[in-house]
Length: 199
Picture 1 (cartoon, rainbow, N blue to C red):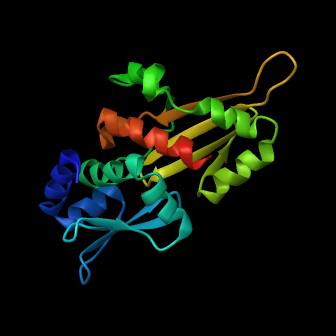
Picture 2: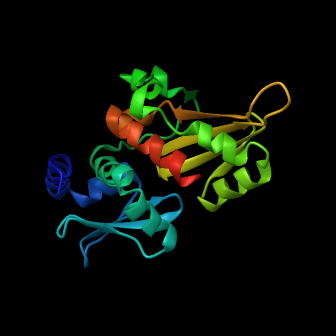
């Protein structure tokens, strides 16, 4: 187990479950010792005692296995650090965050071009995929959907259709409250997770 994950498990195990649930808008089953957290409309079960994270549906399995590199730490750090603060509705670019320059170069660049290629000529399918993930349609771009990787963290994807003059494009925006809930590097992992679940 990576050192960062080991540290997160240790911190989570020492927290009061009632406090965690109020802050993170999660649930706790005292008989099993499991937190239940909604992610992309799926129930994710987190066991501090066993240091395991699991789900009971194919989408949850995909999130926790295929995308485990981007999902496990964000799940733990969200439970640890989330605040009982509602969404602001103010959308911001990831590059405007503290340390946001990492989104613009190298291996940290989000695969938004792949989303544009996948859905640039099929807006209904883009919206359909977003709704499958528990997202809500918004009125930005040619199509947009707000995803909820966690109850208090919203990530919005905007799709612009391609035409003869311009290629299709996808933008990703975050609710301005995201930094209250997650550390900067975990926000990046969460944004990457949101991009990849659309693919």
